[in-house]
Image (cartoon, rainbow, N blue to C red):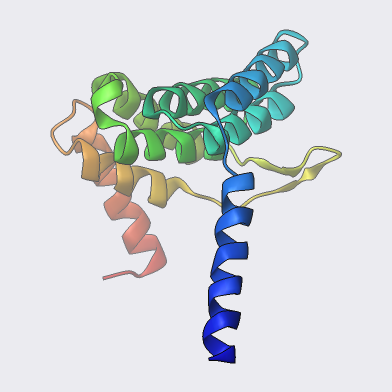
Length: 170
């Protein structure tokens, strides 16, 4: 009997705690507005962080999708193309009905081209000489998965094949 009361009490506390953590669209809109203000000031990385926080706080799918679009835009302006790709990938997988699929996939191919040409995201903004890993293959494979018949797909397949040969992948 004591254990049953303990479990019930724990369950009740857990439910109360989860209700107090509930996010609303109003909080998400406030974070979205903060991100927009930071983006206007030229603080793109901070703005993208606020947009991603707004995505987590939002209840509605439309607001979540808009936050991802805004975060992708801010990451593009900050030249953090790997993070922009992550946002675009989430858009394709989670919000397929609310986006222009062709534009998103074309942007994925362009990001892959940038990485293929040698771009690497900066790991820490105050240490610009420390770069993140090469994500060319990951980006190209995702773009080919989502749009295998795109105009760029033939060239990308050749590039991926060359990368496989260079890395000795089967």
